[in-house]
Image (cartoon, rainbow, N blue to C red; front, top):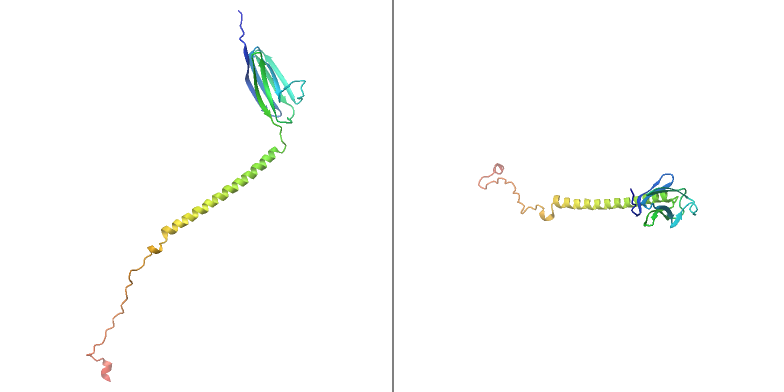
Length: 184
């Protein structure tokens, strides 16, 4: 029985990176014929004879699979792209990540910047809250005055005050003399 091999371009089936003590990236390709795998940093191939001494590359090929892992032994000096490339005569497939050198002060700078922004934005929010609280209180006081204190036009004004009459004292009649006037 004769097996026919169907030609297929290199296809990336797996790519991952993890960061524990060192950065380690792995990629897996499949194709017919078996693809070759290489790593490129900034467009330049990373291999044993390259200028990139900060990397360690290990590869494993088991047809139709090709697997490769790269470990970063130090820290990158500049921002650069790291590419994993699988290639055979029927096609090329790549995957990439960006390596950014760590800034020793970046964490503390980000923390201080975030803290300052939090204080500023918190102060603004608090000031706006109290501003609107004062406006609400003023509006409530105005409403209270309008609804509970009578206006001048609504004040009760008596229409015509009644005159109090003096109590009537009985007057002596002219026909009867008073007992005091009789004795004189």
